[in-house]
Image 1 (tube, rainbow, N blue to C red):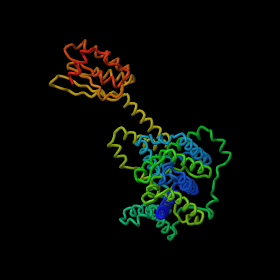
Image 2: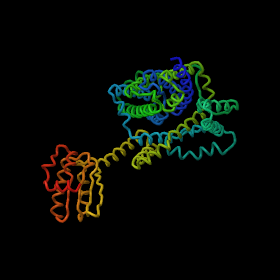
Image 3: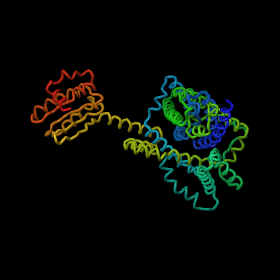
Image 4: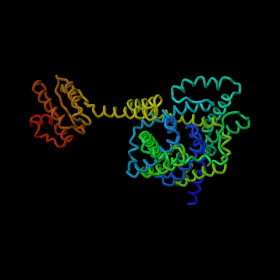
Length: 516
């Protein structure tokens, strides 16, 4: 018991050190006060950790939702964002109580990976601008167009300008993260690379008196609290608010449950109750919306660090939230020494990591069709927005599935010595595929004996059976010099109500059995 508490205590400190810079960076990337990210990290640790359906999962603000938060703020304003987050929490609680948890996992990995890659590219580009003390554009094309001029103004004129100094700090932060991750010393690597990068970059920037942008925090952190206005509850049935809440609910829940599934594979101590996890996330998000926090999800980076630090129970996740609470309550002024370019550099690195090249390679090897959905989702997000990009990805996945369902697979084998073609029917065939079935059967050679097999046929309906019978009769009448045998007995198993023995002549049945 004491040993377990000790391990959870040490793990919670490591998770806290990872969560703090990420929570601040995500807030800044969303264009919100750092209070928003930190308070959602506190709620994600203490509240969600207490009720979570996965004891080792760590929840908090996630980089994957930055795009949609920025879009909501631009279109509807900050106050509407918080009522949306509150509504997200209520929806998650309802979905969890209705046992909908498993349905949030029923998403094509190609869409999820395409979504994460699209978010990663967008975060990389926007935060790259901020890392150089420049202002990002509101869209992918704008950021691409400005990229060369921003780099030129920040890197090439070595004149100590604001952009040049910010570039130095950003580059230093990323370099430290990369070097720290390559160190062979396990004990040192227990200290988060992002934290080391922030500390060293902050020391350099402050000791050299770099005139760049730093975090601005009041001496009393809680002065920034932004409780949701009572008047905003009148908008809770607004269609735009409901749609945005559904989008965040879908993305946040899917990310959380996919993280839970990954954690279950990483640790034998983890066994997720998905509906309970969705309810816990809902409780956290409803509270976060009420007090002006960001949306909360289960986060793989913090959760993996928790497992690697040998956490034993949910106490680790809860304590990490407590440390966040105590730090901002007692030492808020320390945050004022952190350069914004260093935090942006962490998110540039995070955006890069979201573009999982290995996952893309795996999808490509697995299925070219799935890889096409991955690329379409990624590109759609970049050129439209997160919501529309995901919808386009879903539409492509549905079209692909419909094509697979409607496609009739007939595999043919040529037996030269018997002058015979063996045709095997595959999968499920319904009246929707009847035109395709007609075309496929009509294309079979008419100058050979034919055997039509159905051992790999899972389902066939009456319309298709009726056609096959008429096609068989027509072929026999026109091609009297060639045998034709159809596996009616096997076909009847794919359509149980079809009585094959009453449907064809005994002679044909004998021919088929003798051919086997």
